[in-house]
Length: 212
Image (cartoon, rainbow, N blue to C red; front, side):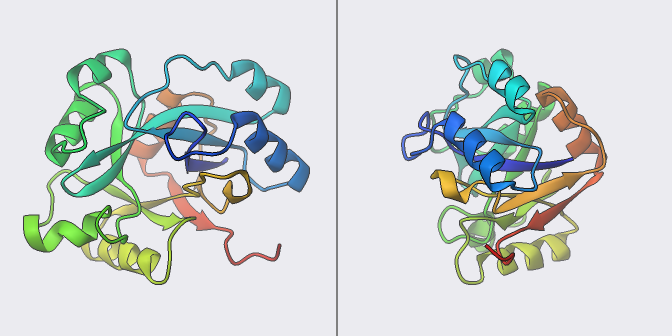
């Protein structure tokens, strides 16, 4: 199963895509992904229910979050109400160690995203804060990366023994599916996503160089 693990809808302050438009784009363009995860900035969208849309389209549509720490931005998968009560997702100065621990305590998983990006990526902060404890996975393919940002992420992941995931980081419809993650398991919900990520049975993939 191939999932784009990093996408933003109009629920994010800088997102310009409706979820229905993502679905339409994937289906009409025949993109080789089976679904995507909406990782809205500094929040978890408890309100929206995409189950009917997912069933009608045959796509997996899951939800996660993107939070901000001193090491940059971090994707959180498997978010529960109890996790949002223990961790203030709106806080732009969260401590990465607190995010990692809270996620683990509540059956979720936290993964630094676009770690090769200046300011908002983990690699930019290692010289100041050191190698963070508890990180096992980082995003090594990001659809919004520029120049050598993915290369920086991949070199860091190799050096530290991190596994890699891929996500488009889409904010507009045409960017969905640029990068993704191939799983050995079938994934139908957020719980199964967390289990598969913890198992290590996945690999990051990119379609950015594929013919249009």
